[in-house]
Image (cartoon, rainbow, N blue to C red; front, side, top):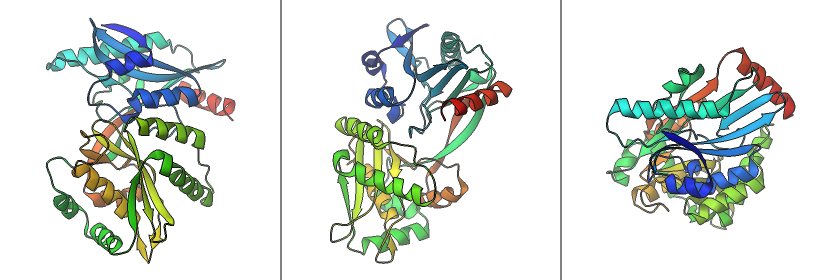
Length: 338
């Protein structure tokens, strides 16, 4: 295997037609390069001229050591990590590609000091992080809820929801609330300000800046990978909204969804239902999308609501440098970054 560092054009040419996250797209990576601190490195593994593995990383070098992230922290990127594209149907060969690519990338990073560390959150299509644990890294499973809309009807999807969720949707449908699907330029700022205000009301700092969210949603919207769903009262008043991102396979609940009521009825479930209907009916911006990622199944309080959609519990993995050096490096970086 030959491992190279790629530019965004070569990365775009190597990206497969499926099996990647929305933040693997060149449009998203370009915005991360402009806004995330550090150097964006795009690694590609090749057999001849054929790309068989990809991995985007952000590398931050400081006097105390090197920090490597995929995705970069505090940028609202839920998952990133490797993309494996071995053409062989044989497990032995696929595992060899995974193992060799991991070793080549880690060797190139030269994480050889006690204050250097590595953290990666893998995509749901990367099922085998064992090569990282074999390189003395810590691997932990996490989960998200993914609702599959393929080969089913909206009636069947609705019937799979919990009784209380169906009632919420019906009650909201009986009001005069309207749900609009609009481009990012028309709706992303409303959703952003709503989410930011809700965090501040709870005494928490909202980490995402508007210039970053604006650039990301506009870039993805131009590529057909972002759409904003907005709930409005009959007089046009904004009630709530969700910014949805799209890979080739999946729609992602990315931002928004703050709790809002109209006429005594919660409207948030109706927004989710409209997104799901559009996917199931083939009206998503990307025709090949057949699933809705409710984004995260790791917080008990939030799971009580998300589980009502009858979605599948899907695992993904985090990879971190292990041992005391990792804790020391995290502490050093928190001091540097204030």
